[in-house]
Amino acid sequence: MKSSINAKLSLIGVAIDLGAGTPGVSLGPSAIRYAGAIDKLTGLGYEVKDEGNIMANKPISPKTDGIKLNNLDEVVRVNTELCSKVAEVMQEGRFPLVMGGDHSIAIGTIAGVLQHKKNLGVIWFDAHGDINTEETSPSGNIHGMPVAVSMGYGHERLTGIGGKDNKLQTDKFVFIGSRDLDAGERKVLKDLGVTVFTMHEIDRLGMTEVIERAIKIAGDGTDGIHVSFDMDSMDPIYAPGTGTRVPGGLTYRESHLALEMIALSEKLVSAEFVEVNPIIDNNNQTAKAAVALMGSLLGEWLI
Image (tube, rainbow, N blue to C red; front, side):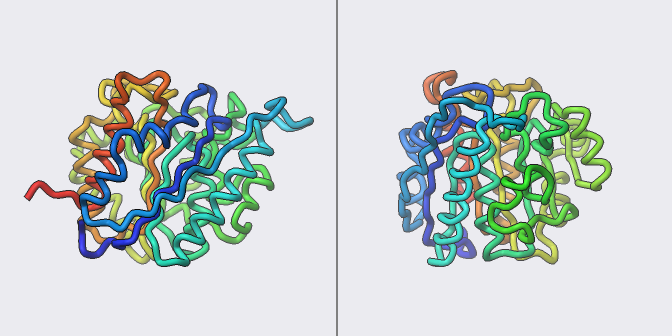
């Protein structure tokens, strides 16, 4: 364990797949626990408190009258509860490590962290942009919108979670591993000037250069870095159990190197691992990868 990382850690599961188009990711927290997350973290020297799961309820209908967003009511309820839990954990002086669940849960995680870290930097590992709004989304699935919401764009019930004034700065946000962006997302990313390291940049520059730049952007002059790691940022060879697989992603070692370097920066204040879907996985391979990556992010060293 890195001495600079908080030794007291809370593990928070969020059992929701209502923000996604593929069912099953609500089982992700259980799969990650089964893959040995608690043993991994306690073995690294952390005092781990398992906070259990925040549970989503299946609505009768995914649609709210006049609103394109799927399952809006329940996604808002779950993320509001998650925001409160993350803020509570940090108030107790503990490090929040959130397990998903679909990526809509980043709305609640980040809103909770912002209660304590007003000037937060974010490094977001993802094949996708997740910066759609109701107007630009092709599907209406909210797991494609958490970045927009966390920056203050989107439906008012989503942007209101944690307070409308507690939002991310666009110039302190970094994408890594992007390779599948909607047309509306490409436009808004350019308009906002958000830093995006696509797989093209990773191939050209190498992960060491990319992550050094990312840490500087998200870490210099901020209150710390939040890491949001979508398992679909990795190539499906290494993470088959995720609902929106895109070929040509991060390798296993590139992923570990990136997280190891963030740990070495001594700027990490919170993290989440999302989109583990054991229903479509191969022998819990993706959950096992998530646990191994948690170790690298939280200071596991060979020597």
